[in-house]
Every structure is written in C-alpha cells, then in structure tokens.
Length: 88
Image (cartoon, rainbow, N blue to C red; front, side, top):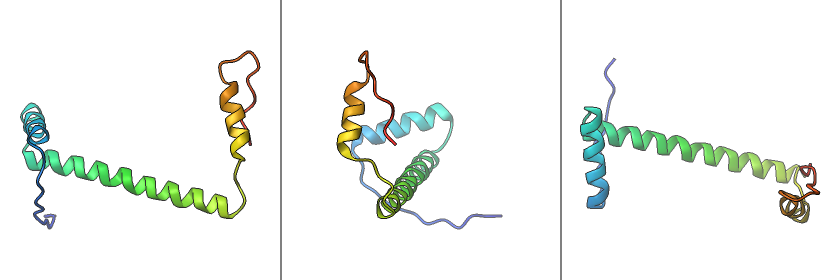
C-alpha cells in the first residue's frame, strides 16, 4: 500500500543540516528519511508528554497529590543516614 505524503519545508541551521547529511550518509538513507524518522520520534515524545500532563492534571483534580514539603523533605533526606520513605 502506497503512503500518501506531503512535502514540508523548514529552514534549519547549517550545522544541523550537516549533521542530518552525515547521518544519512552513515545509514545509507536519504536526508528525507532521516528527517522523517526524527520528526516521528519527536511527535511521539510530545504526544506522550501531553498524555502524561493530562493524566497528572486529572490526578490533581481527583485530589491525588503529595504536598511539596513532603517531597522536598524526602529529596533532602536522600544520601543521608536517615533517608525518609517515598511520600505517598
């Protein structure tokens, strides 16, 4: 099955363009393929970040949160002789 595509244009710094060209040559792939892979990975990362943000906001709305001071006290105790348990 042939994928329908759309051409996108972007201005990138020369140093980044050179890195793309070098990676494409090293992998034996086209510049477009490298950019497509990078863009797909970045989109997946951002979609996951959005999902986690909405999940966290739902937890806050539902009252499932930990007080800042409890987390700070726990973090400050790490590496000491009296480490506190993870706040819940």
